[in-house]
Length: 230
Image (cartoon, rainbow, N blue to C red):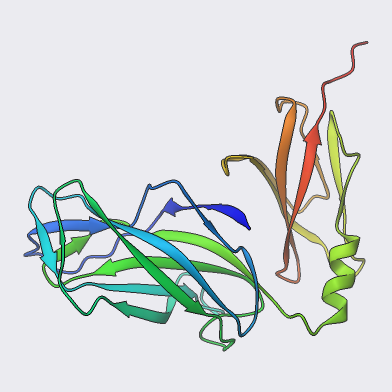
């Protein structure tokens, strides 16, 4: 179980006559599985906040979607959660909804590799001001090559003080390296290189996300050591 950091990135307009505004955004962290097997289920909590000056009271649908496999700028809806009863949220307050994802693999839904999953609320009496995205890795447990590749993804030296190098399967290339601190905040990134300079980072523990050319992503924990004097 890892903590997934949510980023409010998208705007969806529901209607120009909205009485208030609701959104799922800027709530920091909650615990969710970041790696699941295709065909499995997972649950995660979503907070719906009333950003407007008036009381929100309406039926609510929470939509989840993934990036389209052909056109990443488009979203393919994979699930809708309907509250079934009206929800009342006072201005500045929020309500908790627990969603269940069924990771059924399909060309227009969840896919093996990394998916960007987007969540946003919809209601007739409100406009939606922002939505959330997070990443879930859908793993095919039947593939031996998947396990072999995971064994080959290494960061060295570890601990490292200056340059950090990433080993990877010979049949792939590195698309990007992204370093996060332990609170989930992105600290450093580069593209198309197997080495990243971490000399400017403070000593401590970090998470490194390695994206490969086969659209697989792997997380590695590294330790940034102090630079040796002299």
